[in-house]
Image 1 (cartoon, helix red, strand yellow):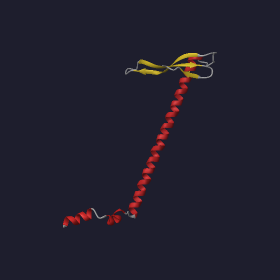
Image 2 (spheres, rainbow, N blue to C red):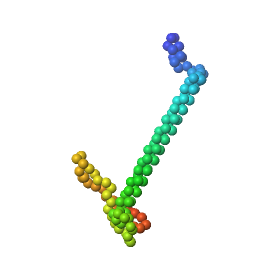
Image 3 (cartoon, rainbow, N blue to C red):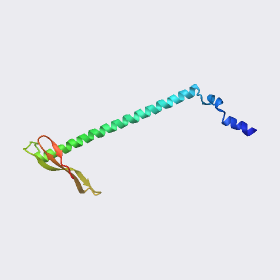
Image 4 (cartoon, rainbow, N blue to C red):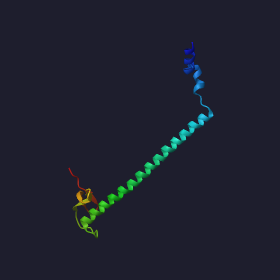
Length: 124
């Protein structure tokens, strides 16, 4: 008989469960504040991600512009005076250094420089 009472207290019938699931005012305020904090954290992380992506985008654009200037200097010389026709140049992307600081290898891009622009040579 005692077990039946304990089971009824632990698992009340569905008609009595309504009052069990209603929230008091303090519980409602607490749940709203959790939602506000969660929304703020989502907004903050989204903003930080946007800022980091914007910084990386600017760095990438600056690196691309540096590679284009290097290609033009290799094709036209340091004064950047365009010559007639196209010129194929090899642009160094940067030196790789080993543990001692010595240059081990480099990566290059083959590019064609024209008066209209700089183009990558497709490697197949």
